[in-house]
Amino acid sequence: MGSKDQDGGAASSGSGGFFSSIAAGVRSWGTAVHKSVNGLVGYEGLEVINPDGGTEDAEAEAFRGRWRQEDRDSYWKMMHKYIGSDVTSLVTLPVIIFEPMTMLQKMAELMEYCELLDKADECEDPYMRLVYASTWAVSVYFAYQRPWKPFNSILGETYEMVNHQGITFLAEQVSHHPPMGAAHCENEHFTYDISSKLKTKFLGNSVEIYPIGRTRVTLKKSGVMLELVPPPTKGNNLIFGRTWVDTLGEMVMTNLTTGDKVVLYFQPCGWFGAGRYEVDGYVYSAAEEPKIMMTGKWNQSMSCQPCDQEGDPLPGTELKEID
Image (cartoon, rainbow, N blue to C red; front, side, top):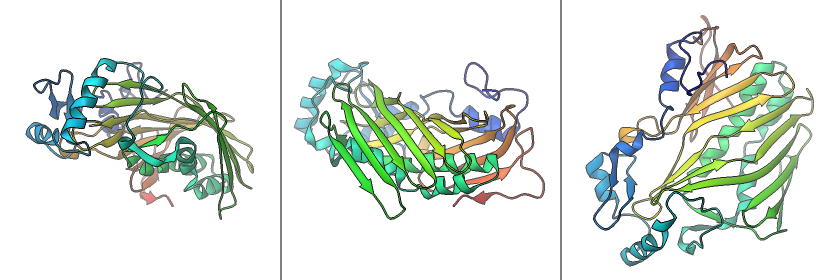
């Protein structure tokens, strides 16, 4: 990526102060860990993070949450041996952590704000087209705040959804272990195809989730094809403390037809919740020049503003909410 160096930091040239500031926050996953509780007596490898407080608050947080003390202790003894492992299909999980829906239904939640893809299809400006499409991709993370796991569908299970916006969504579980789903969605403006597969890293009281499937959207009016690479997600306080979800890192949506792309950075949660939910980035031309600045919160809204080649707002323009 033209605006980032090989280590994932902001390039020192060709970018303004705004870009430098938003990129600095995503160089490490460890921001919130500074206020974690590590190694409570009898719980080697334990990490508890209170997103709204400091170290002393994290210690108190360890004894809150949805687990009874005896269940928490028992499950910790069973699970700590899996630290560092991909637990996607290795472990039988207690029903207490599930919500009453399947992974196939969860996949369909990305269609809640699909009118943004309709607008992307109708948009003549190739850069604003990416603004609408990437905002659609960000919108699903509002639902991902729910700290519950959907049930793994059985092999061959399908789910179909038809809604008032004229879309037809169809998904199928194509692998049970490891769990993997495939889905197709379509209306008069776009087609959407995804193969959903996850890789996880269990860290004791948290889990890192890496999406490694493929997502593509074709806009019918322009004929362009968009490819989405979503950011990682981390579930915190799975056993000790109140469970909460943080999404952090880089989301990239590329126009495979023209080479234009949008790169958005999901900021990690910092001390006392600083930076939590924040998303910032740019739409780039195929020549890797910033064209539109984007900023917002993944649980609220996104806004955009035209920018110059340094990434600074163009004079006479204003930041506008994307709707």
